[in-house]
Length: 451
Figure 1 (cartoon, rainbow, N blue to C red):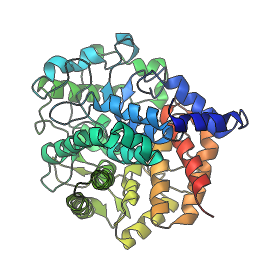
Figure 2: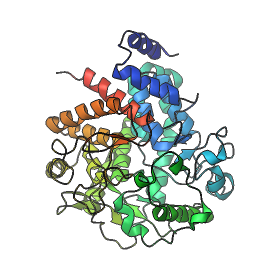
Figure 3: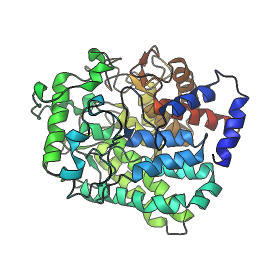
Figure 4: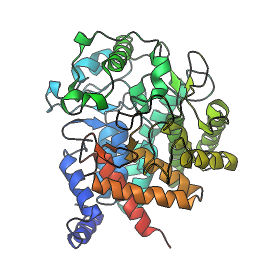
């Protein structure tokens, strides 16, 4: 056990057994596999890419060594073309425990030309690039341990290759932003923002796949069979094209995915400076990406960022929580920050009024459903990102409201996967990894904040 983990364990031993840090630590311990943390033992029994990044951010308060290991395990599954797969499969988990599993993705064969690893099986798609931000925060939790282990020196080349892959291979719209080629890549799988571009996709036959997710959740809360069939069709076509980019029917520029890339590009600049390398080029790249994000995805009429359908070139007129995540960006123009806060606290998202956490979709949208996956429920990772962005821009009042609700609901819900945005009722899996980790991070951050 590293020194900071020993100190943390000592401190937790004096905390009440029902205190949030203790309960969050128990969730993370229960989900730990020895090398990484699963999001949920029942529903998601493998390692997920952006889950692990968020989990590492929380783990750094318990054990910086384990947080570093979390990221190192994920990065060890990187493909030689630079992509970080969205799932790293645990070979000890039965094949039928999760669909689509390793026998579906066939990474070691279908991904051979793209450089998939031979010693571990993964998916072939990606997830949002929050990893460099996580690595920088993990380093700062215990710089001495990080330097002693050479943590930053080892992860920096892999993180740089990951960003290079996205910037060179995924600028499918030609405007400087990264496109996702599957809804699962963006992380907000079932958002109504995908409905229009997905409508072009012929679904895979229902008999060609078995939905393991329905074994753990109510069908009315999960994606429909029609949507799931389209997800499967897109994944099959990408796999059968040997994971070559730029040939599929689905390509969307998403504000959250790109904002997280920009935030992580700033973090990579800090890592480069810590290693004694130049950081100016990375900060400049982050600024260019911010300008492209504003130019291509900002909608003054909607008061927020929208997704762009690359195939048709038009903005998708659906307000999702993704369009609020650019609050994370340090040089976002002040008038855009003001507009985003107005939208966040107004009738479309209702924060501080009708809703407790940030709903995943527009309260006034035709597709809104407070319980159906990403079509209305509130998620802890997106609320954590919005809270962080609000605080970055000095919007203390809404940040305090959101932060207090996040901590209260995380604990009250049993660290649920997501909640009803109005009532806080727990939905999905309980004991969810990133919920516990990010509640722990926010709790510690508020304790450490002066005043």
